[in-house]
Amino acid sequence: MKKLLFIDACVNRGISRTEQLAQTLLKEMNQNGEYEIETLNLEDEDLKLFTGKESALRESLTRAGNFEGPLFIYAKQFAAADRIVVAAPYWDFSFPARMKGLTFTFSSKGIPGGLCHADSLHYVTTSGGSIGELNLGYEYLEKLCKVYYGIHQTVCYTAEGLDIEGNSVEEIMKEAEE
Image 1 (cartoon, rainbow, N blue to C red):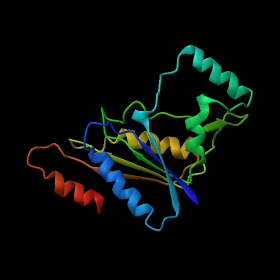
Image 2 (tube, rainbow, N blue to C red; image 1 turned 120 degrees about the vertical axis):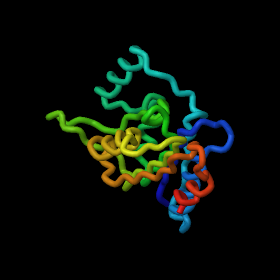
Image 3 (cartoon, rainbow, N blue to C red; image 1 turned 90 degrees about the vertical axis):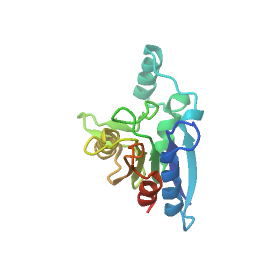
């Protein structure tokens, strides 16, 4: 059975519109039951920023080719997935800070090479205002996927303008879900 990694970067504060849209997508993608869905809820993880000490340790382990241990657990999970769905609300022109990772290497000539097995990454986001041409969170991940991770197909699903007075949240969400 193929593995679908669902990275949930939504903040748990009741009903999340991003989560709602992502669940619709997951249901659609897995209607034939071909995927085992593995959920990584970033809010439930004890994620901490790297200090100089952790950075030095990661660099040392990487140079030694030792990718065991807690520093590499998320990167290995990401790289092993057959398909990836990311649910991340649109915050400050991007996505929540918890959405960072490591899943590539460089050749001896300095050329990046992907270590991921996923056939595609699907990015789900919602916003209270209009994103328009400033979907920087998706654009950032799209570039990482194609240049570094080795994931050549990316798709973005958005529901925008949800908090603009006069807009119908129900209609916008229904259209996005369809």
